[in-house]
Image 1 (cartoon, rainbow, N blue to C red):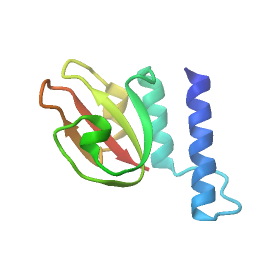
Image 2: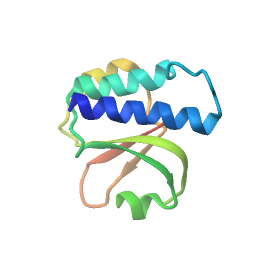
Image 3: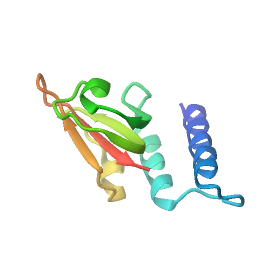
Length: 113
């Protein structure tokens, strides 16, 4: 899991460098690092969180009640009503969007990178 997270973080940094045309960008923003660190500390596996970019319709992509476009890069985390995520809560990072489903109380927290 840690290896997968390192690969994802490396990809995110490399992608960010190429999109922003920054030649000597050595570190990612602290907020993004804190978000990935909290996901790692929670022990969230890759069936519960992921990365996405430029989503045309959230309803079609996630199956949520809400339907709108997401432009940019995002991390999403599925949150069930009975889940406790103390490390995510301690970061103080608030989701950019929270999506819901018609059939249950699960939500998806979406964080813009």
